[in-house]
Amino acid sequence: MDLGYQDKVAVVTGGSSGIGLATAEQLLKENAKVVICGRNLERLQHAKDLLSRKVPNRKIYTQICDVLNQEAVYKLANFVASELGQCDLLVNNAGRGFVATFEKTTYQDWRTELELKFFSQIYPIEAFRHMLLQSNQGAIVAVNSLLAFQPEPHMVCTSAARAGVQNLLKSLSVELAPKIRVNSILVGLIESGQWERRFESREDKNQSRENWFSELAEKRKIPMGRLGLPQEAANAIVFLGSNAARYITGTFIEVSGGLSRFI
Ligand code: NDP
Image (cartoon, rainbow, N blue to C red; front, side):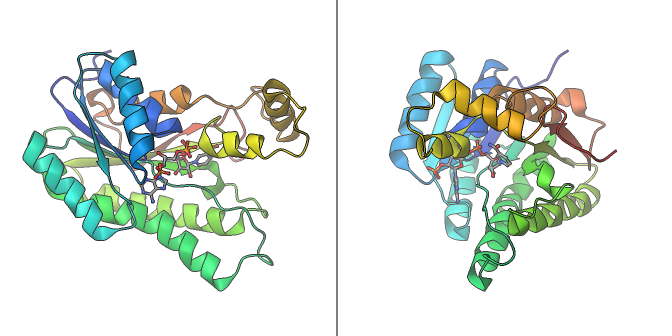
């Protein structure tokens, strides 16, 4: 299957770790030129070094950018326009989850979480829309969560925000068609940054990594018996963003090891 990334430019927000980093790697392997952004310069440099070692002789660019800072997002788009002259794929991946029940969620938590989930889509889409419209293969892929359709009471605010994002993406897939396709992936539990951080802060420091992750998979009743790997989420993103998916828009691929209970 030809994914058609040769000479294409992809921008991955939150590309210095986890799913974003794995997506950048796959896109480089498919011969795309890749721009990654994140808030921390050291992490970005580390990611660039890693990608340059794993996929040598490819074009990888890094830019500091907080996707919640409108000015910074426009700066990122200007950088891409002046350095590369085009953007064919935007992967809106930057973000994190917020764990709290309704009782424990403050008004400020609601505002912060809703802002993160919505504006991490809105600012980059607005800033890159013009370039994506000029591409003959314009695509947006958002990294969203199964929580959008299967809310969890212990993540009430994130779940509600994620449902709203799916709704927004559906509208955009109509408004931006036929020039830009808009899709998402819905992830379950992926073994990346946030789970690594939770593992690091585990109560029983004697518990091994393997044991901690397999207990988590068992507790969450993941049919595939394990958490997903960042590369497995990246595979779906790279497919949805590619020319091989050129008739697919306004939909999603679930990458959850069978965790969803809806049909
Ligand atoms: P990681 O923590 O491994 O990576 C997150 C990346 O996003 C980092 O590169 C981080 O870099 C960057 N980032 C975070 N906030 C911002 C911001 N405001 N502006 C720019 N960059 C930012 O997490 P994952 O790979 O797991 O997460 C990727 C996406 O998948 C997130 O949106 C997350 O919510 C979603 N997700 C993940 C799940 C999982 O099980 N892993 C489950 C459900 C959803 P830096 O901190 O330097 O800015």
